[in-house]
Image 1 (cartoon, chains in turn green, red):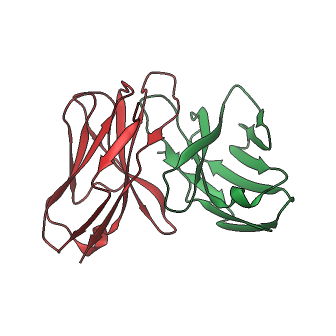
Image 2 (cartoon, one colour):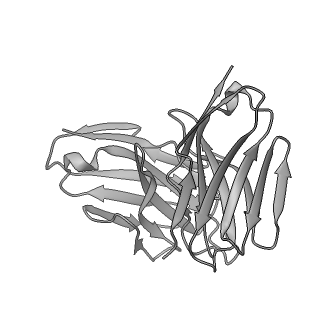
Length: 112
Length: 114
């Protein structure tokens, strides 16, 4: 089955700097790659997703890139702010009836 | 539109006790999921229901049972709780059509087994 690896497990950046989180997946049939943000004590919430027919997607300060050949995808956050501090999870799935497989998460700390 | 709701929010059990975690969604979603979240382990799938009337095991199903009561509700039962089941439990739902889409999570249940 699918296996998703996520790195790094923790990341500290200065406010205003960029942060990059990387994930690799094993199943070449995976075609949906969402990123979730989980603030302390809250539920995970979708922040951006990308499908296999797209190489990059942006939403304001957040972007996701996908390299299907290498089977990896990355989350890029620019101009980081203290409210970006949270745990971020990547995930992968092959179809609507197949559950998401999550990475183990990255704890991002933005230092003011 | 409440989205995904879970009860209870907190629960403390003694080893060997049983309990059922309740989950409901009002988005007319076909698929529902139960995850547990432990520090450093991410979100691990316990059971899921791709559609009403079906349930399947996930990564960590031992010690749990589920019931898809109807399209809205998906419950998780611990028959004989163990300290290793201390965790935060999240229910989630998605449309579950052929085109995969967003999973919506409930607020979670924090369970402690003594």
